[in-house]
Length: 450
Image (tube, rainbow, N blue to C red; front, side, top):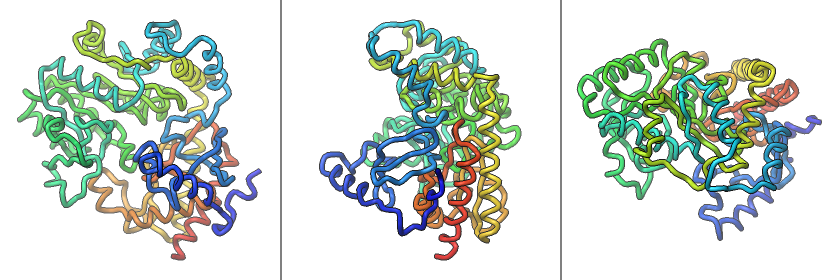
């Protein structure tokens, strides 16, 4: 079944993808429907189908998929229970502009799993629900400022798309970053209430809040920094930030769009034992279908419930996405959450194997993160300590070497995100790990020979 997975590079053909991208570029801006899908090699790939841990492109190439739709497909592609649940809704309609039983059941299950969730409100995307969380924080506190951290991503809207991956020569001093707006057409006025700090430095947060707490509504962060190298919080950092927010009356928001239901049933807040005031979820929540949520303490969520803070959406809790989310959470919780243990064991085996292959190839391949979501990159020397912040990542890693590895892995039949993040699913089994490590060995040999 997998004998030809890591066939020699010259046999892999991408001509149909190249031609489809050429054709698409006449009618689709950039030939794609998300800027994050641009820049593939030799072109953005086009796919025909997906099943379990595999993805098949229009040229007939098969990939062991660690992109998983950028993380949502935690059960793999086209999981039978999710497909069955979705199919069962299609004759009932899709949108009611009203309520239905499944959304109540989903809310009950969600709140039982997520530590901070006294109440929840569902929407369609993580970007949208981040905005709802920030709006609630400002309404609750009267503050105008929102603190976000370098390297963290909270959606593409003007009000928070700041200093995601700023060029170091434009980022300002490390302890007092200059906010960086990454896109043309962005409203500087919309982002003027965002303050930027380095992450994983508790002293900087303490000094900022000592001076600015009276005008600060919220601190928003990824509790595990998955958008930059899967960086873990330093010991005591989240606990310290939680205490500072309590002391100064500032709302603590965790963006768990990636970590939610992936690193633990209750997300990073369960795994790390620190409970925010509000948290945002998406991706793995829907098992590949578009759904998102903001959840938190009743005192904040009631601002939505009373209508004091506006949040709306025509597609919120549509029957299809709601059924998919229910089926996904039920599957993840089945057998006492046994699938998490299996996923973590296989993810850890993959991490350990990649590290060993890097050593054998005498390449400074650096692997860090968690078994369910980890990152590969190249540092200056083998065995360097873990990366701890965005600037640490930007200074220490070789982007060119990373691109060559990702292309070589693609040519060997393994698909990884463009930033080097690997997402595990519950259906990656030992056979796929074996094939992936064999492919990685060939890819690293190719990179080493260049």
